[in-house]
Image (cartoon, rainbow, N blue to C red; front, side, top):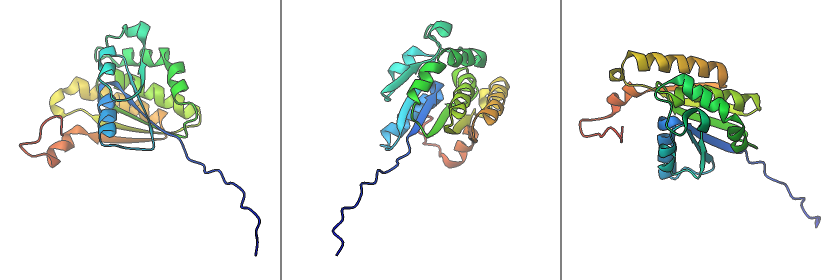
Length: 184
C-alpha cells in the first residue's frame, strides 16, 4: 500500500471580469448582479457620476473626470472615447490579473459607443481574452443613433477578440403587450 502523501495541486481558476460601459452596460451589470451571477468580477465604468451612484457593482470607475466633470458624454462618442483614454490606467488597474474580459455596452450613445472600443483594445493588448457583448438601438431611436452604433461596433470588431451584437429591435419578437420596457 502506498502511504505517500499526494502533493498539493493548486487549482487554476481563470479570473473573469465583466465591465459594463455607459448606461446600457451599467444596466446589464445591475441585472447580472440581481440574478445572482457568480464567479465574475463586476466593474461599471461611466462618464455620468450620478448613474454610478445607482450601480449595484462595488467596483466603479468614473470615466474622464476632467473631460466630462461627471456630467456624461452627451451622446457624443468622441467624448466617451476621450474619457476612456483619460481613465485607461484606472481601468487596467481594475483588470489586473484578469484572464477573460467581457465588455458590455449599449451602442449608439456617447459613453458606451466611444469608450467600449478603447477598453476592449487595452484589455486585448494586455493579453486578456476580450469579448464584447453589445446592443444596437431600437429603430425608433433614429438614424443618427443607429449610425453611431454601427460605427462603434466596427471599432469594437477591430478591438475585441469577439463581438456579439444584440439588436434591441429583436426584443419585440419575444415581448408581449404587457412586457414593460425595463423588462424587455
